[in-house]
Length: 117
Length: 114
Image 1 (cartoon, rainbow over the protein chains, first blue to last red):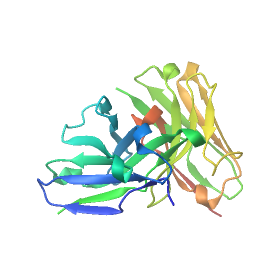
Image 2 (image 1 turned 45 degrees about the vertical axis):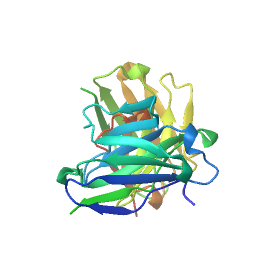
Image 3 (image 1 turned 90 degrees about the vertical axis):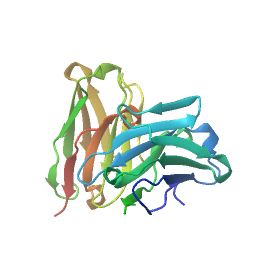
Image 4 (image 1 turned 135 degrees about the vertical axis):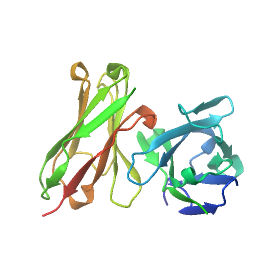
């Protein structure tokens, strides 16, 4: 089982909201981690969107629109990236990441491909 | 403006070696922890290695430990990745990135094939 699992794809209409989940493997408590989110468009490197641990410990990437926001679903042991007011330019792959302290390694999620229909 | 420019990629035979470089500018490189991250064709992101600003702390992914060596030269604002005993599964675009991935280079393609 992957450390961080993301749905492989998600489709939504322009103007709608999209909630991307990043589920941590059982035994890894989402509450203690900062979750980092990245957007990657075809042929380009990833771009940092934001990080979220709590409402008092969060950071928006430079120039990243406020319609991208982070949260957590503790009951589901998951980090969430919410994209409000979807635009065609939001079509991309999205990755989450954590610093996994117990293994001294960064771990990326499996990635979600977002399609704006 | 932060700039990270990777170089050194190319085609190499299995078992061969390659040294990647990353030239940094637009920020205080000597104060910045750095990483190498790779992406195999059509696949997701995989963290490869981390080095602290002073080179005191270094970490590797299990998949490359013992074969790859990360290093830096703060006087030259440069990050390196020495890759030995290369395998087909090391084929990927290699990105250098500032800590926590706040900035990324454009990447350099490494192809391991006979």
